[in-house]
Image 1: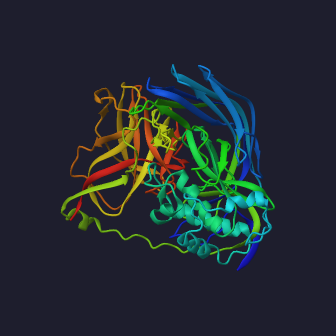
Image 2: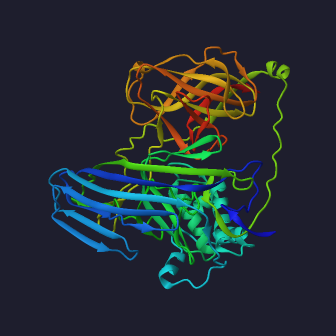
Image 3: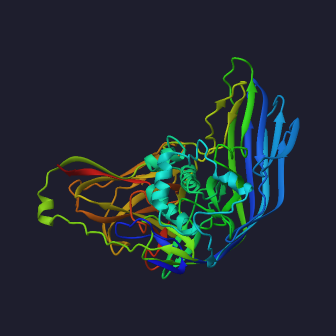
Length: 563
């Protein structure tokens, strides 16, 4: 069936029984004072040090708009040489050189960004395959090592997804819907190229961008890679009587822009937004892939022969929202991907495939559960996070060129964490057991900044997707007995009653505290393990847990299962 309707995203593959596709309307408008500080400590064996920066510029699209003013780039001490150039993708690059660097170097980038997002109905009629593309845009159809759009497996998948598409929008949304469901976010993938992403279904923001770009380019849709910064300022989306809070880490990020002849370049975040990105994005650099968009944050150096020294490096990002207006409303559709996808409404021609209900899970009777032999070790949860990682100084790896020059690029390892011991708020995470277990411990991926206070976990039954009846409380965790570690590590909370059996089903853990602890809980983008309403919080005067979060906290459930 072919229809023309106001629509957000269209479906190519059927979900297993639920969808997380939302149509947004409204907008965001903010004035942001942004500041990036890099501190480099060169060793005495380094003879030459070069730092590169790309100047963020203003940008306009049908949804996301960025206006940059008051840009200031300062160095201390001043470099021996500073040059400016515009590269072949239009990025303005500033290069600073010290020969040799005699002192520690501090580089500061500051600017004011007036960013706004306007989500109203978008009209696009561009046919597919896309025709009449200018030479300036055609360059973004080229395959690269990271965006392998000429690979036969990439081409096969892209053609499979778009075989019935008659408009560019239909082709793009079918590809993005598949990518959102296929990919699983990990901070440290083995590779960043699109073929690895296709085969493994794993990756960080670079993988999402490269895979989406490869699939689209392979069927003639121009896509460019964008690098920039995401800011940690959260924002709320109203969904009927509930609130969905969106938040990203403060750090480097990669996304894409897709070219529509009747719209121009339009931003997409392949991790979950279509035809827009949030105004918490600072757009910096564009290119064919993330190997090409390496100029911003690039550090190079030469050293004495035989030396293995490299500079130590630290980077911090801060952003003050001088003005922040957010008014976003969402309507959940009955079609779409399993994973969350947000989009404005779009007026276009598309194909719609109906939702197929999932089969309900079968549970063992209570009498059977009590007689089982619980002796098999059980471990379940959102387990993947970088333990004991110092995010402020992580950099690299360093690469050596043919002439002996060392090079170190920016990385996209970001600290995704929430401050969870703030007064007046409490956080909860769901988990679903597909088999009964004898509960022993539940662990959270935490980092403590202060040693005063006590932590514990409350365990609840589920009540229609929210914490319900209280089951039990863990033993108290004394923070002053925990040795300091960099980064995040497992804090295991014991449940003293070793005979407690949890039947199959859905449960909630909520973090409780007393005193003045300062604790962050690590999270993963998306929902790697649980359902999309499975991470919640409530404020002091909220009647229930009506606020959900767009990410999933890292946790683990340990115990014994039946043989």
